[in-house]
Image 1 (tube, rainbow, N blue to C red):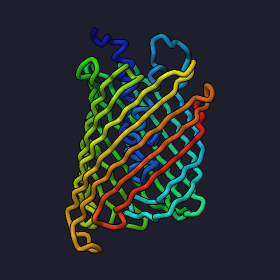
Image 2: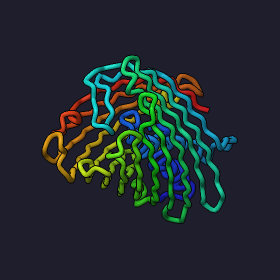
Image 3: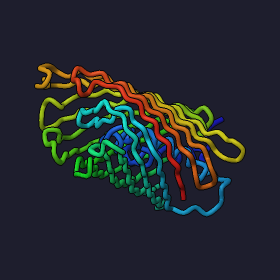
Image 4: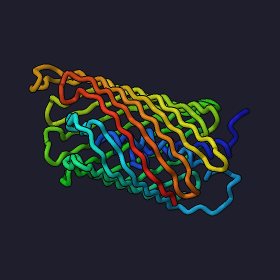
Length: 342
């Protein structure tokens, strides 16, 4: 059976609009570290979140839908090794943190296949004891895409400001053009180029830019209700201090499923990521070139409490192997939140 135009339009809206490359509607792992919470959280988690919004595009749903979306979430997390990945810092100390997230979205269709998405996200992690690691993130996003007959072309822009321990920490500007297309009835491709500019308030040696190429392949087991994603990403990071320059290769495998308990939809997500970083220059503190290999496993489930409220559970495990001692560690993170959606 071929993908007819209504089905293709529904899936395209559900998947393409979800892959805005880097906003914080989920989150890249932005629950993981500072920069990736801006960037990877969108690329992976936002993909799953908005894919599940496909029922709003269902031709059988003729109800009025507001172009504005609001999500509020609050809860608590425990991290057995509080760390800041962007600074190659870990404490080997565990701590609880209060967490709060706000996501605002606006969608507008200009007709003839052109769509605009605007977003703003706020995230706060406030540790009970390790207050120097309190993390606050503000992020704005703009995504514009056009649907052609057999593919979509789009472009996204993100601006992020992060504060650490109450002080200015990191500013990121990111631009990413992308293309999406169905390769077959069940396989969907998204490919993108990303340029990212990073500026640290108190670490100018780490200021720099990133050029990245990425591709994600979606395999639909049961439409957007159940699918697998495999992805590859290459990035080149060029900083003021040569010791932080590297070429990175990332491999991702993700699984998403939505099933019903009674009339309520339960959402399950799981992913694994492997990252290899090849640094260009000697790190003075160890007298040799860094060699980093990073694994991350993550699982998340959303249980409906009512039409507007969900209970979220997330577990994350990271194993970072490096010849730089401060970047060589493992950690476990558990988080639970109550989410309100309007």
